[in-house]
Length: 342
Image 1 (spheres, rainbow, N blue to C red):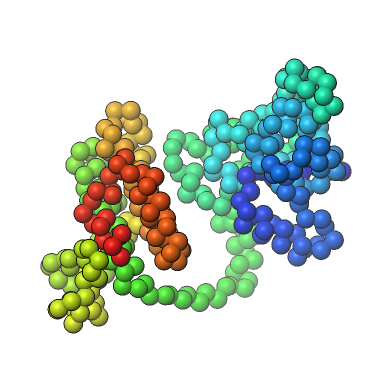
Image 2 (image 1 turned 180 degrees about the horizontal axis):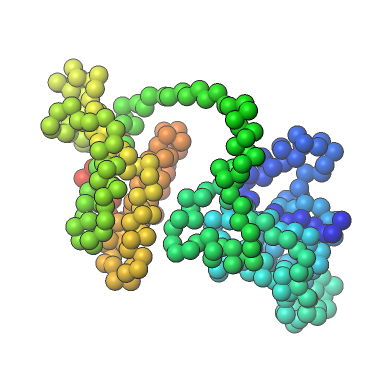
């Protein structure tokens, strides 16, 4: 009854989950309206006045506040999804500032076409910021405090690990976990081994040139099965798959030596290195900066290997080759040929 409830920064799959949960709890409740660029301005005004829940993009929310299509007093609350993406200069922080403090753009025309007067802020509008990626708040300096300050939020709740009632409820009916493991195909193992080899070489280069602490990375390099032989198998080059001669006879375990370093692909190694270099980031050379970016690209590439099908993964690889081109370093590594050849 106090006004509209706006949900900002929601991804498409999150919208589907929220709508499904609302329908499951109460089928009589109207699903949230989706306000996008395709919705006309007059229709957006009517949706705001209807005092219902609405999904809205940050850009449209800011524009409607500046043009006074939306008055801060019409908003009961603002829910910000994926709060780990918020910065001091993001659109979400600007929207919260306008809702709380009001807008002073009295020269902008309002919905009726005439010049609008200054809108006072809505001090009673509550703000809730949600994030399911706590590891994202570990990057930078005091990121949690900066996000809370940007969104004018004072209280921090950590769910569910630090809530005693949640722990007590889980202990009553402990979940039964069934783990299924799908073996990777031979080309996928070659690609993973090549990515791990590139990451390992990059970390060694950063450790040698920038004097950073890579003790954690050295421990991750030795995670996984240990090499069964002293020599590392050759990566296939060209269009061959490397299954000829003695390699075909030993195809039962052709990758045991190559799994060394796979622990680097499942940890935020790039974020840890970036935090160490952040105090002197302006003095870091171009190659070191690019290597830090490439480490994130390679970690994303390793995750997409198991998430995408072969066609989509190949399209993503080709897109990387065209978009990054000569700027990146990893494309010119010898092991990068294995990734594309497979």
